[in-house]
Length: 358
Ligand code: FAD
Image (cartoon, rainbow, N blue to C red; front, side, top):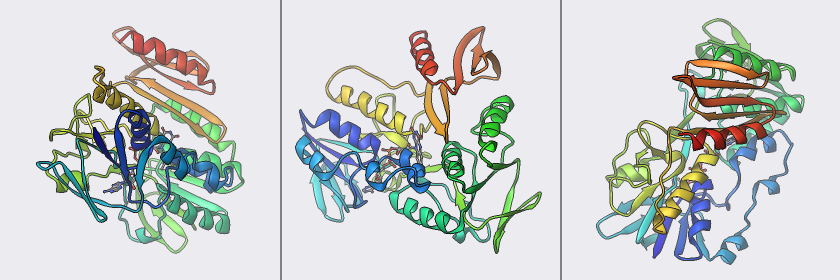
């Protein structure tokens, strides 16, 4: 079977790994470098990781696995009747086509926005690293997990970091958890400005509805926009992401979507861990092994500098601390989710337990 995958991120690469022994696998990727781990980008920007450590699979790894990798190739349109993927470097026939096109950073078009940096690709990371090393100062707009990872790693290296967030809470967590995360990062000198509306950038300041904050280098990290242009152009059903069922089938036959570009019942997972899990479920389906992905069960593990945090299962309005590091969340007297701080090994045990009782 000819499997063509668009996108060489964790979703696309994991799927290729799973299928390459049995099938003819081609990856089409518009970037010109092999796979790199995006969760390590902030370590690289902070000078905590060498560039080469971001690249676990050199070109000859793909060759050994029998995966055809077409770098610098932009997929432009799908002819789903003829089962052909059209790219700027020729057309490719497929039996199964998988869109693993990921996402791009959400933009914030306030006056002065052109001065903002974003962090999604290795190219972005190089630009940001240069600016941060020059100015020793970073203002991050957005208190989501990517913003907090960057804040944690850069502050560890003595860079002055400020985080500005529209909501009064971080990562959509509750007040107590927000305070714990904030407290850990404040120990490294990170300053938080929560509940602020950002208005404009002027010279070296960010103007909010409450004050002017010094800002020589500004990173916009307010979320992602799924990359759906190829799917849309080709007539697939799209909302924010490409609409899929629990087995990642799109609205067109033999076309699947996984990772950050896929949406199911309004959920876009947005993590590398989920993208890889999607790939495993899809690989099973394509091998004829019944499987489906539980989009409603969250499982995310992050590290903000030296501070690990795991979010597992469903977070409801009723939370209680079980011990000083674990907060559990209840639905009808049953624990349906936990947030574990520091010792994330405990979270893995919780994950097994919560999954088995769903
Ligand atoms: P992507 O990794 O975005 O890959 C999609 C690929 O498709 C891209 O290379 C793109 O160039 C290519 N593509 C798109 N359209 C086309 C086209 N038309 N033609 C050809 N190629 C195309 N996740 C975690 O789980 N834990 C973390 O700690 C974590 N930290 C992160 C830190 C940072 C700084 C960033 C940016 C992300 C982080 N993430 C983390 C999120 C994680 O990296 C993403 O969720 C993950 O990369 C999504 O994988 P994907 O395969 O869906 O898409």
